[in-house]
Amino acid sequence: MKKLFIVALFLLPLPGLTQDKILDRELFTYSNKGLEPAALTVKNDSLTKEELYAKAMAWIDIANTSINDCTIKLVSNSPDERITIRGKIAFYLCEVTKAKKFKCFNTKFTTDLLFFDGGYRIIPKSLKYEANNNTLWLPIKLNKKSKTIYKSDGTIRKSFIYFSSTIQTLFNVIDISLYSYMVNNATLKIETY
Image 1 (tube, rainbow, N blue to C red):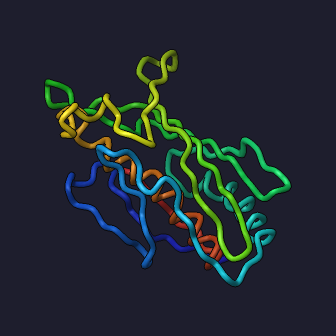
Image 2: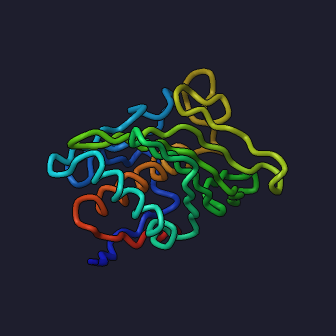
């Protein structure tokens, strides 16, 4: 199996700088409207849904070692070629405190993978961050504006300036890692800073 050590993703990308595509593919974006699109459809005409499903099952084991500080676990799989994965990343989402320091939180996510002949869909389902030493997990709305992150006028709260870029990066890393494995059997070594 080829190993491809590519991507160094920065935990704190510059706000306002976004790319719409990587590898000529659509990416997730997170704004005051929530995560868009709600699901990404990825075409791969050379594989059946059964082959895509089998490759995704193999990718789950590889993703645990290739995405730095991230644990991905299989929650459920079914004969209709749907996989639900749940992951946890240590100290991923960070807010800026009044003292201008970063306070970072453990983060949990759930994503569905749905397969069909010639492609698959990635459907982010939930995102939570740990607010108090594993005793309180706060959800972040993915399908509409988060009142925690955005003010009523749609502008981002100063303390959460990096949340939106980091949220979209999380789901894009999952997408790109899976896609690279599906297409090239390539394993991306992904580091967060």
